[in-house]
Structures are given as C-alpha cells and as structure tokens.
Image (cartoon, rainbow, N blue to C red; front, side, top):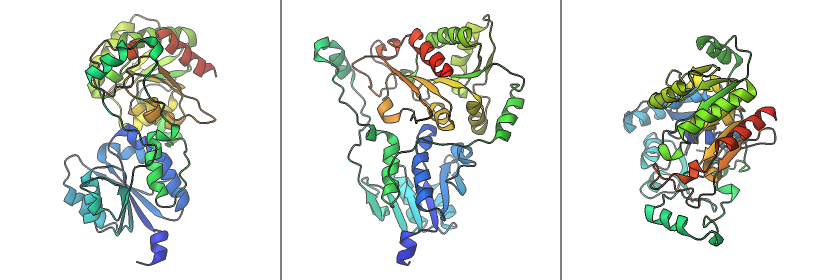
Length: 374
C-alpha cells in the first residue's frame, strides 16, 4: 500500500460502540473524521439494535450491522468483503480488535489494552485526562458521609476534557483529525417526524409537547424517585399547559404504568409510549419534544444530540464524564445534590439514596419551566 493511501484512506471502517448513550457520544469524533477525510467512504459497524440511529447521519456512508450472538468469524467475513484500508476500533474489547484483524484490514487503530494490542497496528494510549468510573464500596460511602462538613467534599475536581467524547476524539486525533470538541449530532427528517405524529396520534396537538423518561437501564441508582417525577409532571403541566410523552423500554412498563396510574385523574394528557416505539420512532418523537425531563440514559443523549433541551437529575453517575454536552445555542440543565458520596457508579444505593432524594421537585420544576421559557 502506498504512503498516500496510508495518509488518505479511501475506505474507513469504524467499529462502533455497543450502547445507545455511548454511540451518541461518538458523533463528535465521526464529524471530525468526516472533516479530515471528506472524500473517504466511511462505514460504521454497529450492533443491530443501534443501526437505525445512524440513518441520514452526515458522517456515515454505510451501516453494517451484526445480530446478537453473531459469531466474530462471520462478522470478520462480512468486513473482509468491504475491502477497507483503515479500521478505527472504538470499544476496548479483545473481540472488536480481533474482528478487524481477521477481516484483513491493513491499518487497525484502537485504544491500547492488554490481550488485544497484537491485533492492532496502532495501539493508542489513554489520553492524559482520562478518569475511570470506579465503583465505590459501601465502606467508602459510609466514610464519606460521616465526615464533618468542614472537611468538605472529597471528590476531586474533574477536568472538562475527561468527558467521554474526548476519549473518542483522541482516537480520531491519532489519524490526524481535529481533537476539538463538538456537540453530539443526530439527524431526523421532517417526514419521519410527521409519520411519528400520525402513528401515535399527535398530529392535532397544539400544546407544547414535553418528554418524560423516568427509567434507566443501568439500575435504580440512576433513577430520580418515581413519586418525584409524578409531582414534577403535574406542576410543570399546570404552569406550561404541556402534553406529556412518556418514554421508556419494555422493561420500564411497571414504572411507567405507575406514573400513568398516579396522574390518571389529573387534567392533562399523557401519551404512554414506553416499549411501543422503534429506535427511529424514538428519535423522531424526541425531536418533536420542546423539552425532555430524564434520568442519565441513552434517550437523554439522543434528545440532546437532536437539539432538544434536557433536564437531568444526576446521582450515582458523573455529568462531568457522561453528561449532555451544551453548546452556545443550547443549554442543558444538569441537577446534582451535595451528597459527598456521589458519584458512586453503583447500580443500587447501599444506604439512603441521598444523592437523588436531595434533588427537590421544586428545583426540577424551575429548571424545566425556565428552559421552556428561555
């Protein structure tokens, strides 16, 4: 292969991430890569469940998907047919590096990790401001909350460049792309939005549409209490005359049913669409929303990348690492309590859930209403 081909790859494969929120956070990197290689054919290898996310994206020419349980040898065979000359591997797993190695892609770039560096031609070390999401033990949590107030919060300050988007931008920078951050970006067409309106009976609504996303796949520690969601939804509707769309996956059905039951006698309309939308319909509906009140979840990232303002109570996770990215045109509202044990990165709280209980309904209501009137 010539030196020119190395510097200017014609066919680039991106091995995408496996989770919705992570996938959205790769979009700044994809845009920078497109900026660097405007004439290249960029294909994205993605789990089947995420393939619809990438429709119409300006950085992606081709979507290659793989099914759950599909053997890595079959994936490698699929990739070999693409005759790619460069692969950028975003996940840190051994399998993702083995797939592009077996596909015979001559240049293979990814994060340096034991047990897989052999399969890469360029193993990129972690960038300087990487902060690992370390789970705290119950003993450590109890120590933190027992400290005297004058000791202060023992959480070290996290630099802006520790956010997850910089991990991906850093990999693209290894190929000469601009490492400066951009806000994540997804694309949905007016036709898709109109089709979603018609399918879910929203076409005649004249009130502002707000979204409510009370679940979180990771675990209950990421969820603001359901009774607080209910109280906030009622007050926000009284102050804005909004119509609510209730989002969630099939696993959130009991949670969303509880919310619908609690507000059934209230004087406002709620469209309970938990588990009823495809990923592409979710994208279209989130774009229709004037605002999304949500936990730290994949749909939070999707809404933010579509330009829909989000209000997010954060507890067990860190907005400095995985929060929504604001821009000059769009400001998102991230709400935290002063719990000294937050973030703990645990799925369930081992004590009294003070991180989320410390975020009041009134504070959330003011954030939503303020964003709406802004």
